[in-house]
Amino acid sequence: MNPDWLIPDWPAPAGVRAVCSTRAGGVSRAPYDSLNLGDHVGDNPADVAANRATLQAALAVRPVFLNQVHGADVVFLDANSQDGTVADACITNQFGVACTVMVADCLPVLFTTRQGQAVAAAHAGWRGLAGQGGVGVLEATYKSFSALALMDKAQSATEIIAWLGPCIGPDAFEVGDEVRTAFNSQDRSAAACFQPLASGKWLADLAGLARLRLRALGVTQVYGNNSSAAWCTVGNASRLFSHRRDRVSGRFCVSIWRGV
Image (cartoon, rainbow, N blue to C red):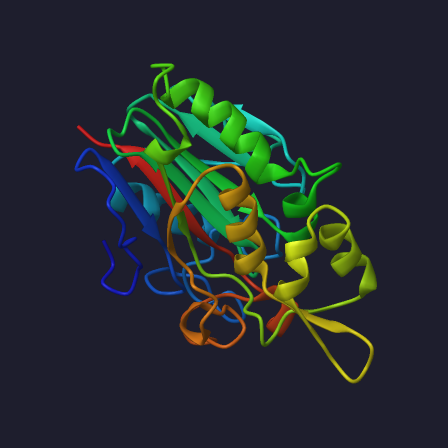
């Protein structure tokens, strides 16, 4: 692994491996420098292909790249899964493939269990996180993942552990009333994740909103992004891509897989 990449600090079992890439280790030129993994942002396709090959070599399994649309669809991955599948989350209990999501301000969320029977990755922007009627990408991922991973009916959500990766932080994520309303109308406790601005807009804590959603599902073992500045994509320009900051930007990724 490139020494600049992030290795989740969480109590995943030895057979589960995960990594969050950074800008380091690739061949793309500015403004995509250097390890841009997004093939939809205007970068040279040959450079993106080389960067993805670098990632795959480091993982020693195949990362499957989704076509993410800020929705709540979840796809199961196996050896036949192809890049470009339309979904914002993926799950697997198979070996040889890595659940992977690309981000550049949205929140990446990883899932596994204490026993490591399965793994999952979700891409949570505010639209996908809010969802419809209280069911967004995390709820959809939890439903599919728990059905796959918790085969024993005596097991519960307390067996699941989650890791939140870097995203736009609460000092940088300026949103309008429609975003605040989308969350507050479903959960009054979400109000604490919004701070008013003099302009009439709000600063939103995306990672905090995700923690609320996970807690409501019974997932209480949540690690990683604690909404501090160290996790903010906007504030860490030398290390992390940010669409909000740069507009023309690459994508980093988080991947999780079952090792042998």
